[in-house]
Image (tube, rainbow, N blue to C red; front, side):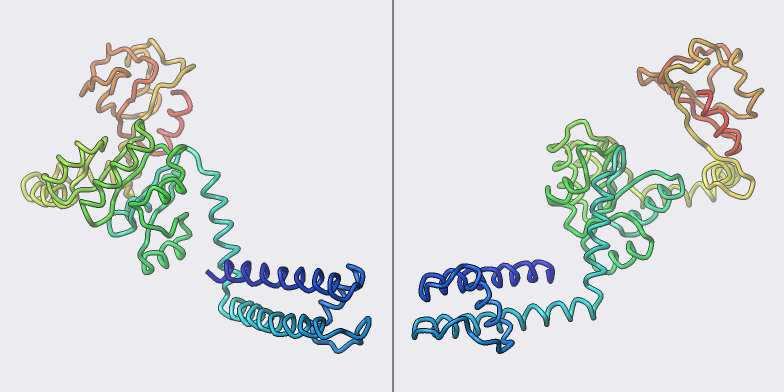
Length: 329
């Protein structure tokens, strides 16, 4: 990295100045300030007169300083010019800003891989204003990430360092979505080892890999090809059902969405039945299911069902109605 090279050359330059100052002071017996002055005018080759006539050893020191100083100075200037011409400085400062934003992330998701699946996940998360950071190593994908203005880390997603830099200790979940199932298993094991309670949603190419991923510690595993095949078959067998799901899930022109909402602490609905809650009457929503706080899933719940704290309601309705309802929940 050019920035690292600049740091190294400046370090050598400082060492040269230090060497010249101390050498002139010890060999020629002049003060430290005058020794520093002699060293600077020697490196810069400005041609100013010497403080005093130099001895043979003093001239040897001068030759060393000139040779070293000119070499280091020319290299440093050349590197700086190349960085300016290629826009490296801009990239460096941009990268630092990016790293600071990643450090500030909390309750975010880590997306490992920015292929077809990873890019779609990022797009959906962005549409819902959910924070995330991508770990990707492919240069072509990095260019796309820069264009999309997504937060990213240019590293191998299977490394502990990359996952730590992505903020796994503060993250809400991690999504291993690289092309290789073996790498997804490795990422899952790494994430689970670093933070055992992390939620892991992993991509899998087939059912055999799905079993391995679950054994490795994945909370959920999705097989895109299997889901895609079943979806196509359902479009032939039950086209109306698929159309309805598209309306509810794809946020189309009708404005209907399928969403989940949690009954949080302090909500006035805690302890009330669905009938007394007036959710359907006040917001015009359809309640599909309730996931109870202890994990039980109740489908097509009755109006007598009581709402408890941390219950999650699965429902269909208009987006603006759901936003209003969430404030009450």
